[in-house]
Image (cartoon, rainbow, N blue to C red):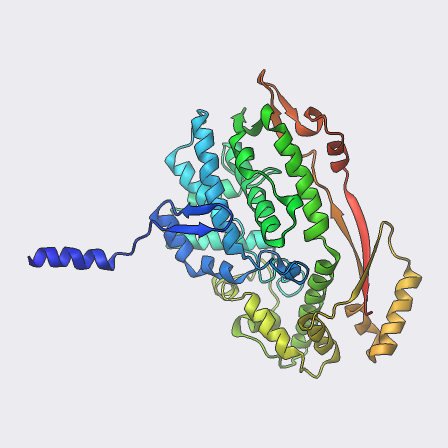
Length: 416
């Protein structure tokens, strides 16, 4: 009797790690094993709940409030489907490789900072998010006794089986199959709604290359066009560009003031990155731990408080972001003339009562590039006769040739 009570008590203490999550896009998503459950439960991964997938895109599309956590869980679901399809087509994938693929795709974005790329261009600019992702993965590998070693090998492209890496990173990888469909759903931009199920069902492997069977060619065409449209309509939307660049300038100004010894309101994690120069060489375990505590909430709470700071540049930019009174943006195919830029600098210096060297925080020009398809990393179509052909040549869609050419646009931002 006492033994039975002990067994029942033990069962009650042991958490159920085979969870099922309900996703608004795919429905029920199953966590495949206890190792992946424990990785998801880890504070490093839980941070992704507090990192928005699309930065300030919600200033344009109010529904775009989904997080990197949503995306990572969606990716693991699609990877499970891809593995199932490839095994059905007699592609040998061991249980160890399956687990490694699931872990690699789960952690592919773990190194992204608050508001995605804003930190990389301002206060954590001495190291890329890809490098930070690897540092997270290596640290998790230590904590989980080497169980992530194969996942890291595949993530870095060092595994001898090339198609495994292509599932993680290529022009038709699991990452893109999720974020296009997910971002389309949350923004309401239907042009980006691809058929990820159909594309995965058409996957195969030939000569160690991830390929798409010929009958899936139209789905690939739609995928490439959808990606192009999503970049112009969503990822490179002019309002989103302005907001992200203004955030970068706010953080740059805060960094400048911190370097001069100014006291700034901020969380402990944000303070560390503002008051220290971060490089890949000095990115220690302590730095990684602090980075894992830095998220969108730290940035937003700081900006709200910086509205009251005595520095005019920091205060004005912070208020403009919080109140959504953004800078005006103009776009054109050619670079803006220096004379036009100089005139704007003078106007801003005069109207805002700031120093000439401070005007570049309010007036700036950059260029954006959109290349929907890259010949160097081709999407290969497998014909019924077993031959491989680049989608751009296999397709009868004339637009695909045009998608290989980078489209460059220049923009300037300045106060209205």
